[in-house]
Image (cartoon, rainbow, N blue to C red):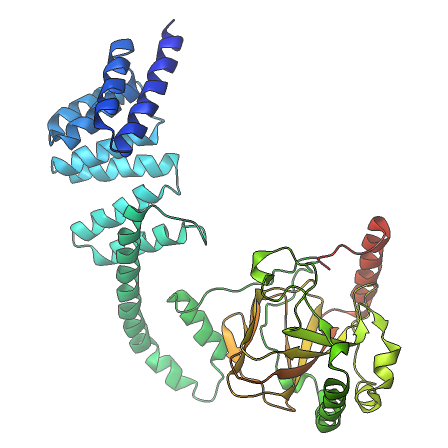
Length: 426
């Protein structure tokens, strides 16, 4: 019988909580009275009664009810949150913090409790502990989640506290590091500077996130050093001829360029799906030579003769002229396989174009190639009034051995054979 009563009281309390949140005070009170009649000493009935007493500015009454409730129920976070509020109102800081710690022991990502811990430290003038607690709270919020409007002001305040603390920390660290930097005046510091920027939350941490195949223990390098690819010299030397052949195709047969994004269901690609705003002219497509197109670009093909193709069955090599129309943007995305890298040879680059890989943004310079890892989030934009054109092709990541390449090729072919073809995300 008591179990049935407990279940009935729980349902009434849930109804009372909803009614109170929706501003239906009379309904909330009626549900609470019914629950008290049915199971007056039920811990959650006591908790709801305590919340009403807090609302009525009776923290002592609330505290007494909660002390009774936690004698029989210690695994419900709402009880501890209410007890933290009552302890705060009564000026019992040690008990308030202990109650919040109980909440987080039960629910480590409870945003209300995380924020309240930060407020606790801020109230007690411990700025650094407050900033650390706000940082933990902010990091627990999933990207894109909709927050209750009442939370937004607290979140914004937390960001401001963290930012102020980061600025103070940066000043402190710069002074601390000044002597060490002087000892190494000629050494590159780019990697260390990025390390410090992520520590100070000035940049996000970007990692490889291939949509198909992840090959472990390959470094997450956004842009590779151009000097590591001396064979690009020959391709750069032919940039004028390559550009001229692209322009011939573009002016004589623009419709030969096809939409790069076709049949993509995701909302992020809605603007470009089946659109020539981002269009390509294939020389190699998913591992197959496009002979007709190659024949129209003999100088380009001669320049690519020494290109170290990433020959993956049904997937690579790939080589295209890529056209991004005026006032167009390619949204952030990641590539399919980190055993390959991508080369861009810019051909036509008006002002207002840019390219970001991870935390680094670059401008294209016509005729100057660069190599990047497309399994790290990247995006491109053309804010100008004319199209932008780049030649794009893929290569093996040089850190993948010849034996590993053969195994990756066999693995890719195996997946294709299993499904009849490679999945659409490859």
